Image 1: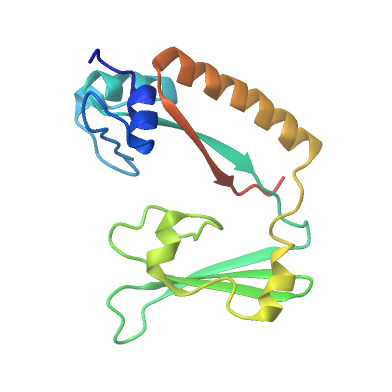
Image 2: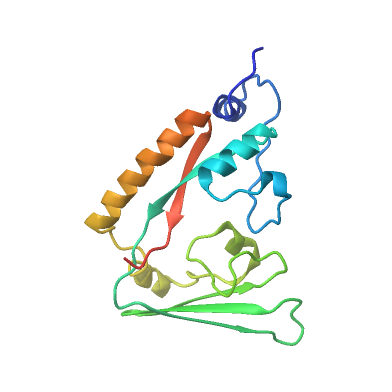
Length: 181
């Protein structure tokens, strides 16, 4: 079998088809990297990781927008008996508050904030944003339709990301990105 591009390898592995080697994906969130693989931008990251055999992925961030009347408050405390400090985030919506509480573990990568959408939230949550039926009516204020400008910027960025993926033979995937725009 000839050597596969990273994209070909990822797609074949997901389809349970033969691959030239097992795909290796590392998301280097906050990692301190050795000098020879430190990067300053997405294209440099892709080139350096592919060069050492890591199957990098290119992410496409789908814009979200909150209602302009939503206010947020974030704070931290460390209750007795908890192994880690707790980060609290309250979204004050016109229909009432939504609250998220997470354990701020040693590997927490979001600083003093809790992003609206993050895989880190799931396993560290002490309180989820939606826990009651009343919370559902408040959620619509956190996920408003993107503005025309957000859609325009998204399309421009998506075209750039596709060009990067095509140029380097990488797999691309999407996720939400919080925006107050």
